[in-house]
Amino acid sequence: MASPMVATRVQLRTSTGRLSFSSSPSAAARRRFAAVRASAEAMATEKLGIRVERNPPESRLSELGVRQWPKWGCEKSKFPWTYSAKETCYLLQGKVKVYPEGHGEDFVEIAAGDLVVFPKGMSCTWDVAEAVDKHYNFE
Image 1: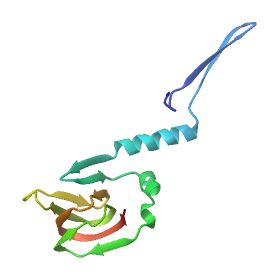
Image 2 (image 1 turned 60 degrees about the vertical axis):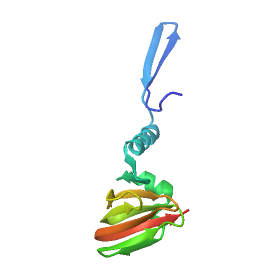
Image 3 (image 1 turned 30 degrees about the vertical axis):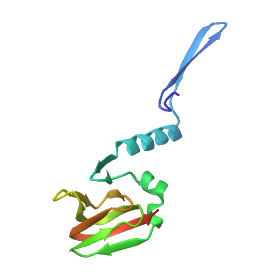
């Protein structure tokens, strides 16, 4: 399948010779291409079972309906947590080191602007260095 950003070259034959022109992609096609590229460029990694997408584009957040999810927050603290369901959250503010159980001192650091997925059944310790405000969704 051709990319929407590929310009098309058309040649027409007339009685006086050939007429050729190029058509550029439409503005809508350029926007779709930019959204796909931005989504693919968002840095997504998985470490210790936690998936982190750093600074996803607003189009990705809108697609997921993040701004309509409930909010939760906490002050600087340290506490254990077990996920009874898969959770996807988007951090509006804060910085946390998450220590999944069974991985010793290994941790995943998450911060404002991160879209994070925690798997169902994960037990971990949250070490909140900066107060957290987040949108969250359980599946």
